[in-house]
Amino acid sequence: MDESQARKLICEIGVLLYEKSYVVSSDGNLSIRLGENRVLATPTMTCKGRMTEDCLAITDMDGKPLTDRKASSELAMHLLIYKARPDIKAVCHAHPPHGTAFAVAGLAIDKPILSEVILTLGCVPLTDYGTPSTDELTEAMKPFVEHHNALLMANHGAVAYGADLWQAFDRLETLEHTAKIAILAKALGGANDLPKDAIEKLINIREKSGYLSSSARCQSCGYLHEAEITCATGNQPANGAKVSFSREELIELLSQAAKLS
Image (cartoon, rainbow, N blue to C red; front, side):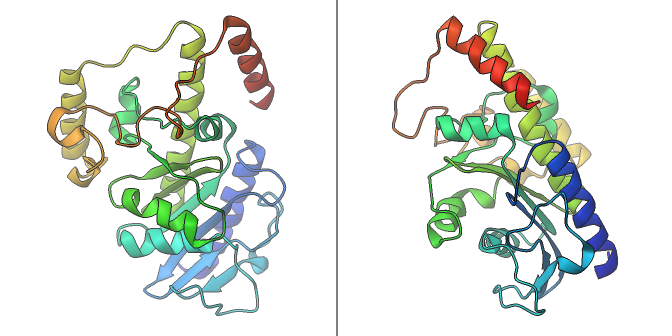
């Protein structure tokens, strides 16, 4: 993809993020790796639904500006992913409401409840909290980037990445859809996990079909040895306390979620 096409695509995906309420105001950021040492990124303090192609910034792989446009202050997150994953060519960071609700509650999206998610995304771990736009954030992400294609960042939002920007967006959309289903299932009494033998079959299918490579059998999950989808970060809040809701609280939560949809 040449630079002109990349500029058009970033603006197109930016509108989608905004229209789906995955971002508001100047939230979120997008980037595409143009070459070995050039990254095209969304600018700082700009609504993703109102960007123009000429407002995008270009930097090198160390974040040094190559144009007079200033890139997002969270570009370091993107550069970390590109350096750790040579297969990744695009990154999408946003605050999708249901996925971010998991991040705020201190929960990973790591339960094997949907076959399609296991096939195309895998588990989404929760990283420790790090102040946005600082090294704290990237340090918290480092242990997870190599073996996952999307992350939740505690009290912050979500990031997904892929071989191109459409794949990165699709992974973010899958993350959000899964989080929404999990919240709805909780209101109905809880989701039923897929059995281990079914998970093993799905993992074999996705690797043979090329959806995900064996590297997605991540070091912090039980994929590799027991085909379980429970990250070391756990499906518990960061402070170790369990999360529970009364029926009334769940109804109110779902009512709020419906308004955001």
